[in-house]
Length: 457
Image (tube, rainbow, N blue to C red; front, side, top):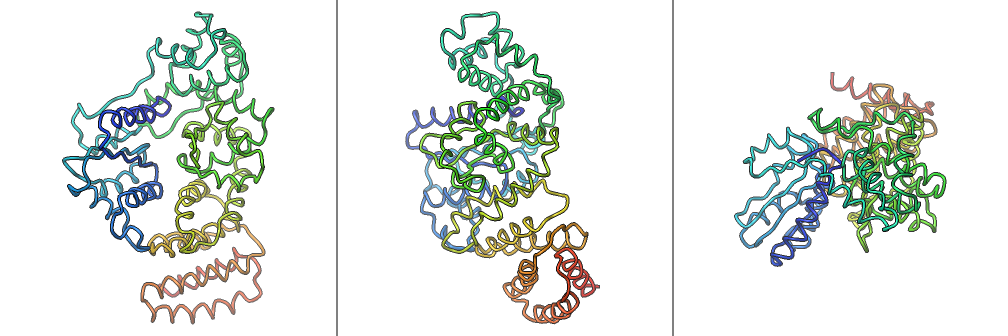
C-alpha cells in the first residue's frame, strides 16, 4: 500500500519473477483491478487459460465461475495479483469474487487505507511502500545513464532530493537526461527554472494527506519537461499521449490507437513515449500502459491550458467513429476496448453531444450481445436521464433518435415483459407524432423522457 508513483506495481512484478523462479508449478494470474470491466476481462482470460467449463457461454457469469474454479483443489497452487485496486466501490464488487483455496494466495496493490482496513488483514500481511532511500535513488539514476552523465555526485544527490526520491519521477528524469544527452546538473536547472503553473499538481485517491503531499511538484516537473520535448520533436507521440490519458490506464490495445491517428509512424511514436517513461509496453505486447499519475497530469495540464473540453470531445468522437458495431464474432475485441470506452465517458458530466450518444448506444449493444441486460439498461437510462435534464447538445441525429427509442422495446422484450413493451410501443407512436417536425435530438428525447414520466405517474 502507498501513494501512486512509488513503484507498487514494479514490486509486484518483481514478486512474480521470483515466485516463478522458485515455484515453477505455481500459476500466476495478473488482474488489473481499477474497474470492473478490466477485472472481468482478466478473469475471462484466466478461465480460458484453465479451460473452465462454460467460459465461452455468452451469458455466463464469468467472475463467478472463475472464482469457483480457482477455489477448487484441482486448480493447484496459484497467485492472484490484483493491481491498482484503488476505488472503494469497485473493491466492494471485487471482494465478492475473490477465490479461496489453501493452495492460493492473493497480492493486491492499492493507494487506499480504507480498502486495506475493509479487508481486515493481519499487520504482517500489509506492506507500506514509501519513497526510496537516497542511495537507492542515486543507483536508479546511475543504472539508466551513461557513465559520463553521472560523474557529478553533488548534482546527482541534489536531483534525487529535488525529485523527492520518488521512483516514477527518477525514472522520467533519467529517461529525459539519457535521451537528450545532457548532464544531471543541466536537468536540475531546467526543473528549477520551469515555472509553468503545474507545481501544485496533486494525486487523488490516497486518503492520507501527508502521503499525498509528497507527490506535489516532482511528477509535474518531470512530466512537463518530457511532454514539452515531445510536442516540439514528435507531435504524433504527444497526440497519442493526449488520447490515451482519457482511457483506462492498463492494457490499452495498440489497435485502439488507430482511432487517434492511423499513421505509419505509430510504432515510432509509441517508442518515443516509452523512451521518456510516459508509457510502458512489454516486449511483443499488443498493448501499452500509462501510469495513473501521467494520465492525471495530462488531464490537469489540459485544464490549465483550457483545452480539456475540446480534447475530451475529440476523443469521444474518435472512439465513437472507431468502435465497430458489436456482434458475437467481435465480442473479444469489444471486451478489450470496453474499459477504455467507459474510461473516456466517465469524466464527461456536462453537455452530451451526439457522439456521446453514439458511443453509449454501441456500448449498450455490446452489453446486449454479452447478455448483460442490467448494464444495458443502466447506460440507456443515462441517455434518457440526460435528455430529461436537458443535457444534450446536438443536431442532425434522426437515425440515432430512432435507435435510442427502439432500445426501450428491445430491453423489455428481452426481459420477457411483452405486455409492457406493447404499452410502451403505443406511447412511442404517440411520442413520434409529437416530434414529427423536431430535428434536434435534445428536444425529441426531452419529449420522450416526458412521455415515460407521464406513464409512470
